[in-house]
Image 1 (cartoon, one colour):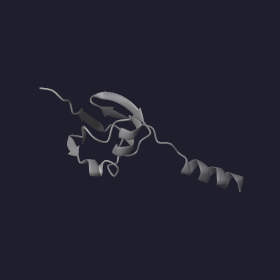
Image 2 (spheres, rainbow, N blue to C red):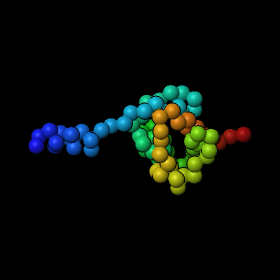
Image 3 (tube, rainbow, N blue to C red):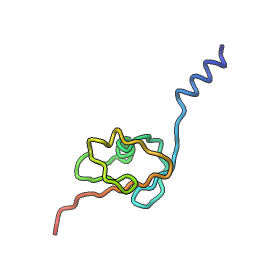
Image 4 (cartoon, rainbow, N blue to C red):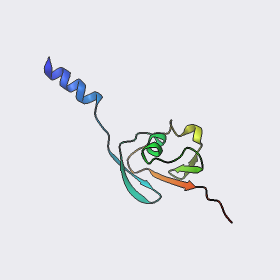
Length: 82
């Protein structure tokens, strides 16, 4: 019985660690979605544009956009000035 419980516990709480590239730099993350990655990086929800593997991702789709090992994320921050 204990072994079954341990296997179930380990299955439920397995943490996925993967490498993604943010603006060309390697980063290790446990985030499984683009939205979670942005939260992990403590980025504001406004004033940024985000691309995933060469495609811009609308803010409304960040939480539903899955991440995979080796994904390339581009984060562009808005800047004032001229």
